[in-house]
Amino acid sequence: MMDEGGVTRRGLLEAGGVAAGGALILGLPEVAGAAAASGRRIGSGPTDRRSIGLLMAVRQIGPSLVGFGYLTRVRGLADAQLFTVPPALRSTDARASDPSPARFTFYAEAKIESLAQLDEAITSNGGGRVRIYYQADGGARFDDPATFGRGLLIATLTGNFQNDLTLTEPSTAVVNMSADLTQTGARRFTAAGAGGLRFGGPRYAWALNATGRGRRTEPTEPRSELKLSGDLGVVDARPRR
Image 1 (cartoon, helix red, strand yellow):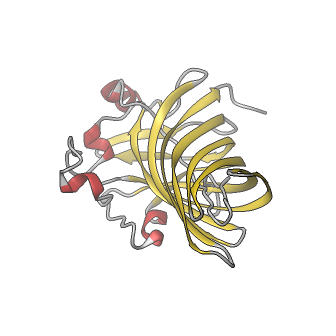
Image 2: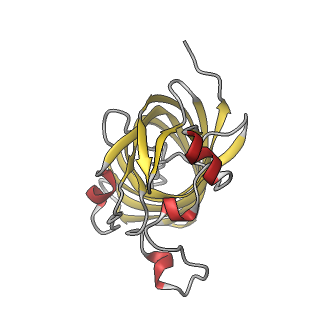
């Protein structure tokens, strides 16, 4: 996660060595034109609304987690503003596995602060922050995590994460991640020709939910990798004082 707002859903896990974390924020692709033209906030919707979609990878080394990925949908933006080329419609399309067209990326860092286990069930908790970026020309690559933390920093969030794991084999697990986040920063920016946009708002409260699988790659440290997809939504859109 990058600082200055870089909070990623870390929560994360560490299941016997498998951990997860990282997160993002954005919203449903609705009212794209109207929101952009009026310069209203994007990404945030009414209370409890899942207004942002995301796809991410998480890497764990001991208690430290780094999450990185991109937004697949954002309330108030059209696909042409989210991606440099039209998104894939089938999993067999090479574009489905290529993050480089994504204009909205994020980079997060977190630390596991507690972990408990009951047979195959593992739960861990931690804190961290996530930074969300706008990259006009895209270019992020999963084989280079740093590429998700480039461009214009448009929002930062911090908070607490929880990762719940169910071990399916000694080194693999099904993961469910949740997070309570507070937005600490937002700035106006221009996306694909639409100016005056702002992602969420200062002190907004967000809820993250994501699912996926984790794989332990080294048991002693431990090291693990997690792949997750999920959504983010505003719990309460009223700004805090």
